[in-house]
Structure formats: C-alpha cells, structure tokens
Length: 192
Image 1 (cartoon, rainbow, N blue to C red):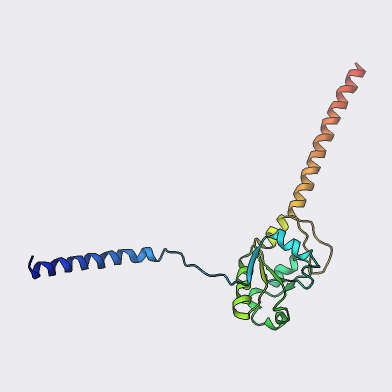
Image 2 (image 1 turned 180 degrees about the vertical axis):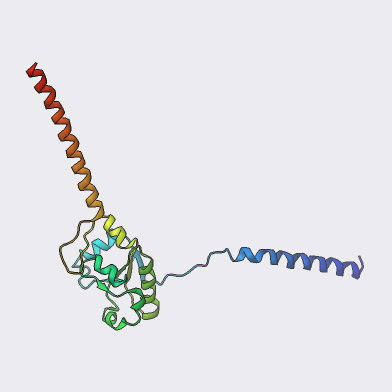
C-alpha cells in the first residue's frame, strides 16, 4: 500500500474517532457527579437520634440544631432544639463554635436542608461530630416521638399516635354496636 492510501485511511479513522467523541459528549453529561461526604458527618435515623437524645451518660452535652425557618420551628420542634435557619448558619456560627467537638444532631423537615447544613458545618467550619437526622421532623413525628411548641408547652401527640387513637375509637364503636345488636336479639327472644 502506498503512502497516499495510508494517509487516506488514517484521515478516515481520525474522522470516525472525532465523530464518535462528538456523539459521546451528551452521554458524558449524564454520568452522575459523585460528591464526597465529609468524614465528620454521619447520617442517622430518627430512632438513633431519639436514642442519642435520651442517652445522657454517653451524650451529656448533645446539641440539637433545627435548621428550618423560624415560622416552622414555632409550629413544632424537638425538645431543647436550637433554631438557626439554614440561610443564617454562617452569620450565627459564633453561637455554635463552642460546640465544635460536641455531638450535634441537625434536622429540618425532610433531611435535605439538614444535610446541606451538616456539610457546611463540617467542611467550612471544621465541626467534627455532626449527625444529620434523615427524614427530618416528618419522620420523627411519623415514628411517634414527641415534639414541642415554641411556647415550651407539653409535647404534642404525634401523627401516628393520632391514627392509633382513631383506630381504637373505631374498634370500640364497632364492638358497642355489635353487643347492642346481640342484646336486642336476646331481649326479643325473652319477650316472645
């Protein structure tokens, strides 16, 4: 094969290669970006958070940080939670700095804002013991754990507990109706 023929084949292969690269560009955009979670952030379930909060011997100085907006905090929150909305963490970091090496449970409504706040505290402010409560206060309430109001009043009943009460009331109603019906049948037999 002469050099001219080799040159044509090389150009053809080069064009095919470039064409394939151009075709692959849109697919490269679909490759998920992997984010590395800070080593000092641990995702925890609401049951783990509940256990940590109630284990005073292992976590005597535990901080609970609510990163929802103040209006959300006023509706309900975990007992003794500190309210610093996500957008105000950097401005209020001095309030948290004394707790740099103390366990901090961070939560929001569903766990999204708390994950962002947790990363911010760990990466940008060097906090070392951050626990992001997955599922947020919604999962906490669903699990039947107590929440408090801004006035510090008694804990409100969780949504799952309300469902249990309604189910029990319904069951009692059905039983009462059944026994009434049975008593009426017995009375009718005796009267006839």
